[in-house]
Picture 1 (cartoon, helix red, strand yellow):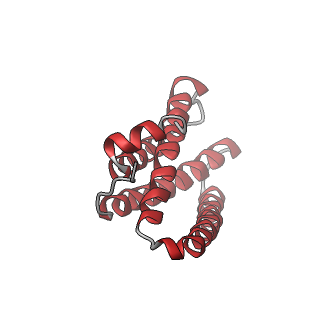
Picture 2 (tube, one colour):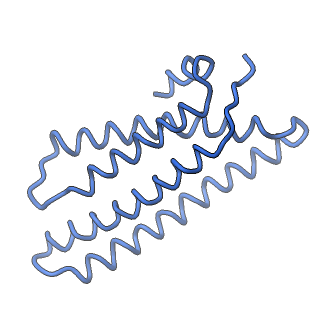
Length: 149
């Protein structure tokens, strides 16, 4: 996906690419909420991973373009540093939230250890779907911009 971004951005602009990426991420996560103890890797997990990987690739690069294109050139260094810091902090905070959801759900699940594990995983992926849905909303709020090219 990263190799496609330089071709997609001038053609469509960053907003549509970002929205499509967020939707693909969410679709992959929704698939992962359908896991069972008997789920095989292929086809469901394989398809979910392809959707999520493609979505992440299509989301983050154009998202950075959108953010950085709204900054004055004199502020680009500070804005870039703040952007990277917030992405790292957001990832850590999101992971902490999802691990907490997983731990709570798996501890409270009834049945075998496998069922408890899958219950925790499904709960964590459900939380991730909520986060991905919020990213779709955020992506939709940006005004359309086209990078100078």
